[in-house]
Image 1 (tube, rainbow, N blue to C red):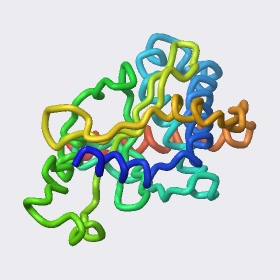
Image 2 (cartoon, rainbow, N blue to C red):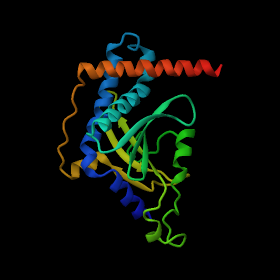
Image 3 (cartoon, rainbow, N blue to C red):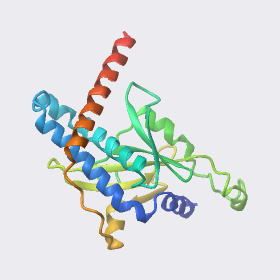
Image 4 (tube, helix red, strand yellow):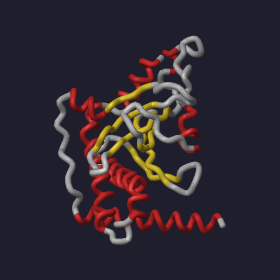
Amino acid sequence: MEDEFQRRLEAAFYPDADGETIRGVTEGILLADDLLENTPLLKNAVGRDLRGHIRRSGIIFRLHDLCARGDLPFTADIVPMPHGNWHWLEIRSENFKAHICRSEKPYDFPEETLSRQDARLVNQNDLFAENVVPLKQIINQVPDLYAWLTFGAEKNGSLKHLCWAMPPADDGFWLAHINIVERAKQAEAKPRAPEEPAKVIKLKFRDHIEESLIQQNQADKDKK
């Protein structure tokens, strides 16, 4: 059963995409740190408090762009979270959907949230149990499965880890797990080096952040 989850995760997020995934996440972090460094309003304690959120926004912005351009072989849409007023990037490949979240270490679970709890309910441990339904009968009839793209970064912006990880519906161990950075190393792949984002991309990201903050502010007002 665990082998089937692992096989499906690897089929959806296959090695050929590792290089561009690493590059997209790294460039997203570079975008975020550049914005924090060169925006007087954010070059203070408030900016440091927002660093994690803005880095996540940078990754969302860059991966969404790479998917739209076809550099990454996934589909991706920025959609509202089920709980709260924030948005997240929904990445789809095969019958998986995935969201981005930060974790301390490669095999650590991210901080629990209501939205993540709801999303992972589809990952039932007995989904492929042959004593429930013969595997051959359901192999092409499985509903959406769920994964996280977990990342960790140093204070200086360098990438610590990046993983595709399939959580269980409740507490427990990973149903499947791929360390993207390690897999790329083992394959001796040479991904295109992350680039310092061009000025036009920096301006687009600045506009993206401003729009996100305006939407968040409006949503907070609507609650009152």
